[in-house]
Image 1 (cartoon, chains in turn cyan, purple):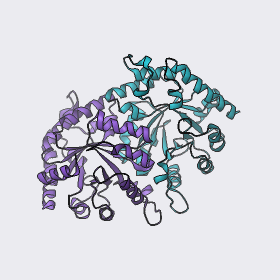
Image 2 (tube, one colour):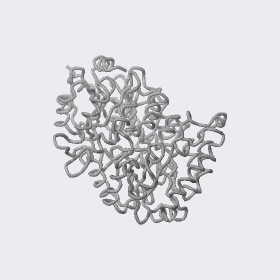
Image 3 (tube, rainbow over the protein chains, first blue to last red):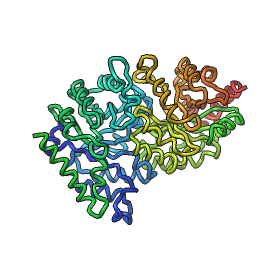
Image 4 (cartoon, each protein chain N blue to C red):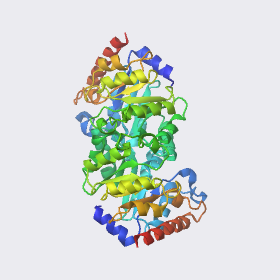
Length: 267
Length: 267
């Protein structure tokens, strides 16, 4: 999917909502427990209930890997459930030396047909560039993350810059705003503003609204650009809006609430 | 496996060799192409040919993930082929926010019974500590990697330290030398020496000997401690020592050459 196509879909749906499919078997509603593949049944119901309100889905790989080989079948089947035109993100945070990064890129873009994959930049250029070789596919590189531990390495000062700034500046030079996005946590509004100033063209994937406490309005005010330039992710606040039999309706209600707020912000 | 147990095995085998099972289907000997699971057949033959010479095996997950759900079955079956007492490393380089890192730790220590997993520290403390909660299991955290891109982020200066040094100093404080190792590339002998001085007790996993050009003797001279403190990995130089029907014998010959050199260094 190109940047323009993504922007068009955001405009058409009045939404820049990404639903994080971080499906934890321990948190599934009791009503699904006798299903053959409870995680898949849950994902299907969530996708059915939210796909007109979202522009993107982001399964976090950890939750599928933890289920063993079968978890990857569930992931594949989940992907097949996502209607065409929605931007899919493998939240994998991979990063390895060149020949291995090649194999990871093959995994997510070829073995599984994701539109994008999240990438950890700690190992530098040759760990990132293999993800930039697939036309229409995207590397979404960690910039400034939403978690408390972001302060430990990403906030280290290198003099004029912090580590996350020096990292993002370099990453931006390895690719373009047509094949690279950045992860920037919603819990860092001031930094988000500066990041947007420095990278006016890049899409930003913003986790941390909802369970982690970031504000959607603040994210939009600080992070939007002329092509919106934002995918705001919510996972737990949508998936687990209810633990009862009405989990899908409750998920839709929460997605609708967020989409409504987004429509207002988009004007 | 405890640190003392690992050291005992190194002493008994006169080897600190880790064989990297980075099995690339495109590089398999023609003789295996009609096997039901060529990657598994290859791994089995390599393990049979080298397990008395090595103390550790390290499958790099990328090569298994690229095969789809079946790749994880191959990984599981490969693990079951590794004789007891060999230290197994999931070379996964995972790293994510706390609740997700929990799921990754469960994946590699519980769903699959690895002794250790490689971890990327860019996201900080809460992305690493979940891997330190399993008695007898290890987090092997990226310190200074062997690839050219290591220079981009890891070598940034924070004043008195480089980013990799500040990272390792912090990581060392989150765990102990009984549950944390570091990845340090064999291609960085001078840094290896300084790292050993700063972290006298930690085991170091050292890739980059062989295909990437690092020297075993130099690694030992700069990186060994009183408990050896080293696992030196070789992947391609052993796996692909021959592409003919004699691939397993050729792999054994190369592993034997390295183990012989290690035995001499261990004295």
